[in-house]
Image (cartoon, rainbow, N blue to C red; front, side, top):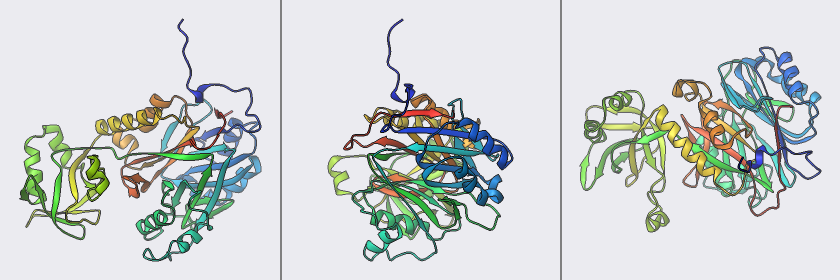
Length: 434
């Protein structure tokens, strides 16, 4: 038999050693909190003290949320605890096969040993935010006054009741422009407390963790759409309404431009247009660097929220500007699989091998998009084998597109935990369950 090499995350280790990073995961489907804790404890027998514990809980446990972290902390030790409630959870049980639990009970726990990493959890409580036109210092104060040069990654979890989410994301980009930000909006529930977990508390507002030192996050943002028709330029726009577009000096209303595209579509594609049509909004249309290097425009996929039949204008879930590039997009399972396969293959080919990954997926993905369970994590297994996965189904996903952080919908926002190229991170030991 020919010799071959295993990926590093599949190579068993005799022990983590004093300076070896490690990851242990557990996933429970039990309907009671006590049953879930017992199952998780069995999967994680003998685990040592972690640097970071990440906890994702399905909304069926909302009333038990205040009990959860204290009970977990009686069983496991970690320097920092962070997590949220979700419309479903993603996790990796003892058999190492990650799975997605949609609209059913589930608790997903990931314990991480990250020697050489600097971890700075934070909480933002209250509705008032600093001025986006003011200095960065008030924004940094919200995060505990970190050194923005040392904070190169950020996990970000937001309660669904928090206002001005886009302003928050813009302000965090302003304060920590070099930090990759990945996360999501937590699940909704009817209990009288928030949806976020930090330390031993249940909070509303915003929680997160800045990551620096030897470890960081590589983001992969899969929007699940494919373009149809040409790229247009916005000629007239008012706030979020596009009134006129052009292509090769031909000007038209957006609806008339779409009608021309429909002629060349298949019957199946025209049927998708009825319920799965979006608009891609160019993010680097105004970038001098992009124009000089002939890099393709990166599109941020946004909902079409209205049509004016009188003038053929369309309303978009994004503020629009004259000169911006736009392209109509279709969302379906085939496009989503193809896009995610390409993105994960590109991530796999990077030099840094991941220790684990986090997935913040839209509630509109999963079985509703793919027609079968575990659609996103199955593609991750194709690319990365038994790489541990944890995360949640969210009401909005956070991740970068074209150098800026954005709030997405219908998206899978991945955060691959990788050793930093400029830091000497030792080899990792990865295990699922016990």
